[in-house]
Length: 260
Image 1 (cartoon, rainbow, N blue to C red):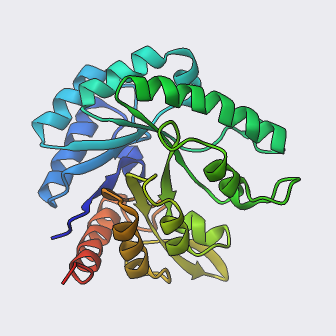
Image 2 (tube, rainbow, N blue to C red):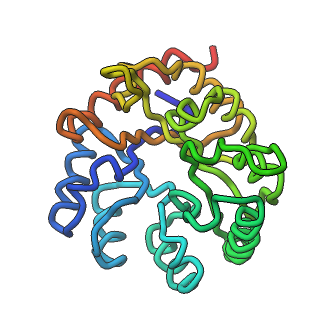
């Protein structure tokens, strides 16, 4: 098995985690296919205490979440308390809010706010993490890509990353190169595959698309990534079956890329 832990980003299964009973059924399903590492994202309004109890009952490790940036700004103490219940040390956001994306000044303001949140988290033994899409590879007025500017203008202890293989590729950069660029600043990496369907790029189960995920796995190993979670934004089949296919194929990728 993999030295890097492998698991599931629950956003893939979001339609099955909107109520307590559905969330429990989903955890039971994941445990049945031997997944015990999860990212919590896209979950319904279930009390944090119940989420914590169910994850513990089914032996799930919560490696990271996607949490509302608004809540981080206005309810940070409560958000951190919830994550302690989950035994989760990394609090991620899914993307930079729209209002910051359009200019260098906007990105600087986002960095200022996020870094202060990250500083408070760091003081409490937790870590802020940023998940990329493709818009971060647009260039700012100064010629820098937004994502590069985020890397270069933030302090690692206050601002880490959740890299995404699909969105790196969609953004026009080499996924493995960018994973290595985040060396030491990424605990969790999202693995998703990339295929062309009817002339357009779209999501695919791990191992069924065009991405060189072996190279991405090796880059994760080199960059100190601890956890890889499968995320597929949309699925052409039942997302649960999609997750099972991806997990089986991710295990194969991990097995053939172990240190000899």
